[in-house]
Image (cartoon, rainbow, N blue to C red; front, side, top):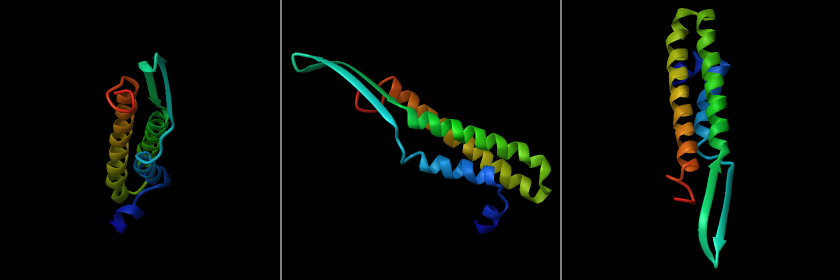
Length: 108
C-alpha cells in the first residue's frame, strides 16, 4: 500500500482524499412550507456532494493527464487512482441528485 501511495502524484492523492472526505462533509439547503402545521412541500439540496464531485473529476482528470509525463512504472497506479476518483465523484453526484429529487434526505 505504501508503494502504491508513493507512485501517485498530487492530483491522484487529491482525488482520493476528497472522495473519501466527501462522505463526511455536507452543505445542505432545505426549505419547506406548511399549512395548518402540516408540511405541504419540501425542497432539499446537498450542494456539498456536487462540489466534491466537481473537485474529484478535476483532480482525476489532472492525474490522468499527467500519466504521459511519468515513468511507466507509475502509470498503472495513476490510472487506478484516477478511475477510483471518477467512481467516487459519480457516487457523490448520484447522492446529490437523489437528495435533490427526494429519494434520500429529509424530504423523502
